[in-house]
Image (cartoon, rainbow, N blue to C red; front, side):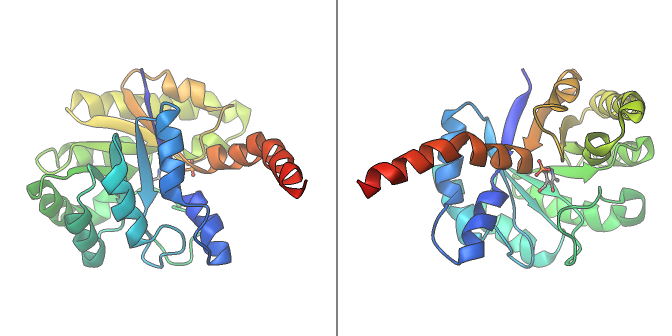
Length: 238
Ligand code: PXP
């Protein structure tokens, strides 16, 4: 069965908006793990706009499943990873102005830099994955890094936003990349923009082991929980 790793960044976004201590991504991690998620994903951005270093350490300390730390290749982030020791690091491109990760790593341009970082992490016993667009050339280049990476995550952003007439072509490209990667001996993951409406077709691709899903799940949780939260407050008001 395809595993689910829940990205709890947006729980931290809500907390940071108030500069408060709640909602706590650590508490969210416990809830989703109890509900069946196999692990937690956090993106520690250089600007620390949502997840903080202390969140990574706290989740590391209490999570039973896999902790996947998304980060850039910057030496500062490598230092955090070596200190907090997540099970897996997913290397992503990061632009300070972006609202969310905008695309996969360009391995053709950045193979040397990515390889250097991946080697440091792998030597430290941390599994390394790369966030890649569904592009066969990128997957072939990743296959050449087998010594220092364990897998790659296919960026499903375009698929999740595409018009229905493009969906079959995008899915076919994702499936082809998944097949090529798995044949090369890489673990295959996928994520970005997935939700209840579009996830089934991606989860049905046999080579894809795990999905990373955040925004749609946290957004849905607001509405699933809003009625109960209102009733709780009215009860508290007496
Ligand atoms: N995978 C990567 C590499 C990401 O950067 C993100 C967003 O933080 C996700 C998956 C999850 O995307 P979404 O929040 O749209 O589910």
